[in-house]
Image (cartoon, rainbow, N blue to C red; front, side, top):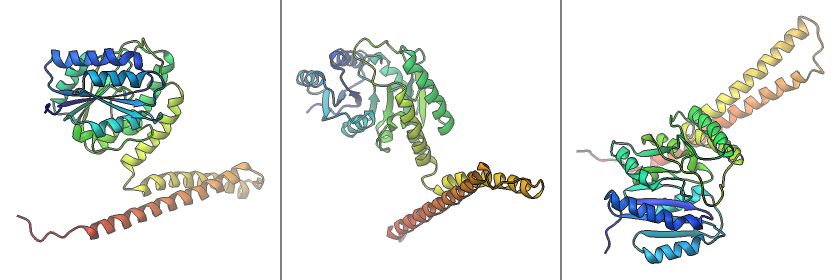
Length: 316
């Protein structure tokens, strides 16, 4: 029996037929040149419509011990592809990278060396990025917003070139577009993340699958991640905070209109601010109520879970 792989390299792809064979050859050369041990390369074909799958079949036939090929019937997105790859990975270390040859396989030893310093995740930083402005500018906005909202201080959340300890990635669940926020999700679970600069090549095959539109999806997913990582166990703080802010604004608006009415004698019945103030107070009450309901649901769930726990007789 061949030895179990110590390193699993997970590569999601969509319509990258021209790059798959040279990418695998570069990976194999890197692993052999640096004596990094046994490895497997897990390719996840995310609904490709070109010759990607036949190419993977050829690679699998030529390298049955190193190549694992998975295929989705249609495109499900990068998060789903990574999740499928993580589920299949056997190595203690899991490396993720893109299939477009823009990532440099020779960087893998640097990731492993950084992991050996005690980190659970090492993220690549495309410091000199070889992409058009349509990709780099949205990425800068996204990275700045994610740093500010999450508190995780890395430069490049979008970089797909990362290395993880297996127990780290198996502790989180990916769906939607959450692959961008893996370091944030790991930080919420207590895992540590470091960052290293990586070489980035210009794309020579295929076309980019991303652009400005991912900025809007990313913004919605960032809100989801913040709620899941900070307020999952205290929804009252999230909804209550928004409710108090809304109610306070409504109160100030109505208070100023009241002063205008009774001190200066101004008519306020037709003022749009009157409706705005009332709506803000109603919205504030609804948000606070939603937070309280969420707290009651959490309390009920925790109470039931604690009742079902076995009682310890003694401890040695």
